[in-house]
Length: 197
Image (cartoon, rainbow, N blue to C red):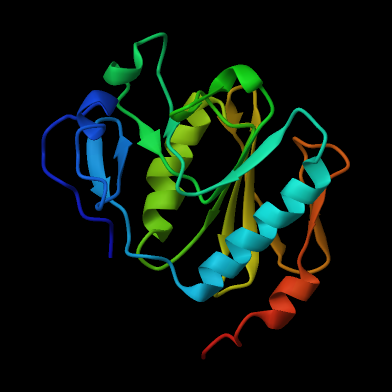
């Protein structure tokens, strides 16, 4: 099951700003995708724990972690905000360049993006958003699989994501783009509900 498209019209951030606030969309190359309903408790526990660990580790540094919802505008070049046709809301992100931050959110590629997958968003996150993050220059892209208790990690090299690294959610996973920082999984996984067969 994929995310529903709003319509077949090419949209920009200028259009997006005029839409009702009670319905959330992401724009991918001008296509407006309806965001999934509120995430489940497991999703929120994982995203919240990753955000908490990043926040604690980055306290006092120039890098700042954020958690959804927050608009991340990904221009292709130097177009005005209203002309940007890709706006996403990653579950967790880190921005180390303060020039990319403004009152509306983030303009430009975060250094790290983490998406916590759900059945309704998995294909969208694996295919569309991976392509967009690669093009925009996101240095490190994590896809956390709650059901499989795995994380898939893409790292940018020469402008492309190579073969992903896949790890189980156990021990620690180093964040390559933030040297010396790692996400610890064991306590988090221990409090998650058991995986249903």
